[in-house]
Image 1 (cartoon, rainbow, N blue to C red):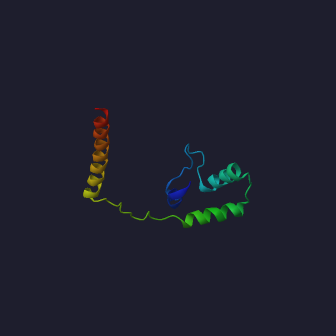
Image 2 (image 1 turned 30 degrees about the vertical axis):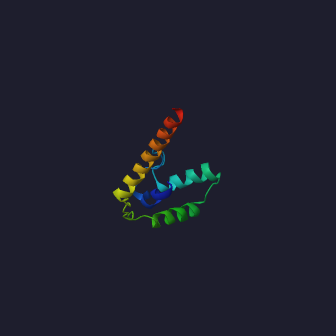
Image 3 (image 1 turned 135 degrees about the vertical axis):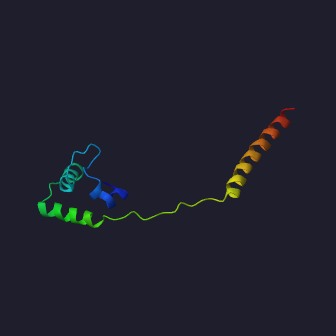
Length: 95
């Protein structure tokens, strides 16, 4: 559970890549032990689970930017022209 996945942890159980933790409490306990080498009290686990439950919600809608086609095409044309110019220059020098 990291990054954007924290916002949807309640609908993503079981937890971990192999489904080893069936509950969020179990996942928090395992992570505390394996990542931090700590044994958490029941109260600490409950606090962390309550915090994580507060993050549940909808992902914000994001509109991906679209580059103008002319800008992209111009960049491609510039690259092609530059490479051909260098090629012609080298051929000219060889003759």
